Length: 405
Image 1 (cartoon, rainbow, N blue to C red):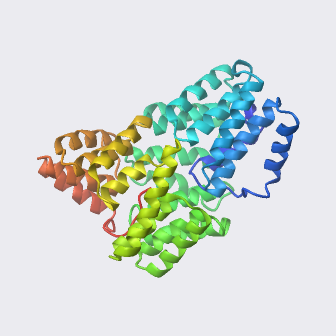
Image 2 (cartoon, one colour):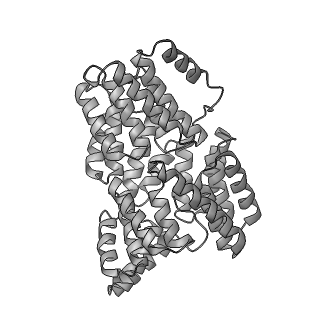
Image 3 (tube, one colour):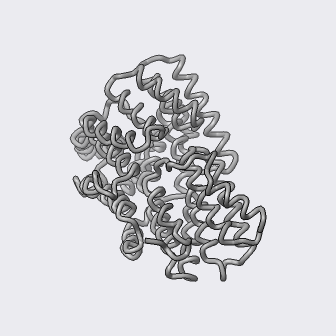
């Protein structure tokens, strides 16, 4: 099935985008990318080629882990709109919405995608970007309605991944997993599906099922750095520390992203190896701040967590948590703010923020544990104890190693 506004490329992009997995195309040696780059070099006014190139750059970012490809995606989308203004070029607006969404500028992405869809109601790419931006902004009911509208145009895997994310937010018991298990082993199976299943099982402390789905993902794409990073976390959770460290180092050599350096530093800290923990935390922080200074909003939530738990600096944690809340009002942005307030000793304000984070009934051990600690210190002791018990019930292995995602 194709989606009108993007001449078929959107159906591919939707599957890739659904769970944030790496795509099979490599950043180099990609014939589609090379063809489109030559096409726009030969004809800078070819707005359709610019639109396709923008989406191909997004896919390349996902396959390589290199966020600099997003700058190229945005430049290509803007070049399309310069060649043909948005009133006659809604697919260019949709491509720019995708680039801004991937840059975590969710409010701008939502505005652009709505404008594109209003100009061309057949544009499924614009509409699904509306839903995804609504989800990241914490507008969960609106996202559900948008996904219902676009459902006939979405591949089954892309739709189920979105329903699963909503079901997880809304605390719907086993449904987030059940929605994806029906895809496993079918023609709709995908790397994204298996990685998401692995994450959901890991969050429940079921390491055997986590391994099962990571192995399936690895068979699909043996060289995926995303699969390797998840396997490193699994090894660490099982106490297979040498294997975990080796895998993290391999991933960092391939993809110098700060969240992986952060995870390796956290693993060394978990193992009470202070010197390498300081080294990797230092590298992570330097890279986080470097990317953020360049206008990259990807890591605000990570930096807040870093200053809360990896290198204590409560004032900086609160600063970055507030910046994160400025770009998205999801439950996890409120949870990050609540935890930063807690670290600053502002327990009443932390409890108020955590009330927002828990408003949808989400049953995530990380969230419940933080809520339990906050409420216990804010004078809501019985509620705090209840939530701490719930955290352990959701994931009996919660106190083991896990990374911040």
